[in-house]
Length: 277
Image 1 (cartoon, rainbow, N blue to C red):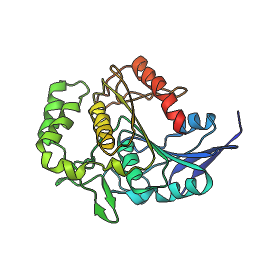
Image 2 (image 1 turned 45 degrees about the vertical axis):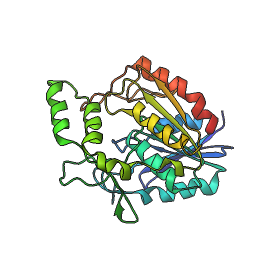
Image 3 (image 1 turned 60 degrees about the horizontal axis):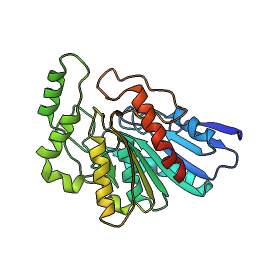
């Protein structure tokens, strides 16, 4: 295996791993934890791909929660990868898949987007603050969003009876309750010039990621654009790619699936992901 240089990005709180001879640079985005995806970057680097990950909220000078995050937050790392590698890819999971798809619509230099457990709309930011505000801003303006259905969220917590709640039905309820907001909040994925690969588990208990992946595919198909969707009926929200450690279970909400199914979905998805790297 080629030697890999690992650098800590102190200004943006992140990491970049660069194997000798790499021709593709990947920006790796976490979900709503906002964490730096070091393990996933190391896995990608082991396959000869340069990979960078930054903390995009909760860091110095950044929003403390997943709300009102400037999409320009990612500009510098994207520009750096683009300047040094022939191919540019963004790979995001969950909340990060939301960001990855949005970035794909804004940056024609992005050659491919991978969305793991994706959504097809922009959501309100994860915050108890009311009135609700967007997760994202662009040039200082809020990106149109679908608000959360607070009553449905409360019902999900009650129905869990002290167990970890599933919010899948609450997300579906929000899409119905705020149906008038959905058209403006729908990510214009037909503007993504590059390849799109989406990975979703049928047992996702957090949000309806298979429904979202199919919505993205339908919208792009209507514009004669190909989209690869990889699913597994029993996998949950946390998809494990080959060579990755399994994330610890959330202590706040249900992800669904099982380790075996989550790994199987990752195994199914890897050839499709590797093909665009």
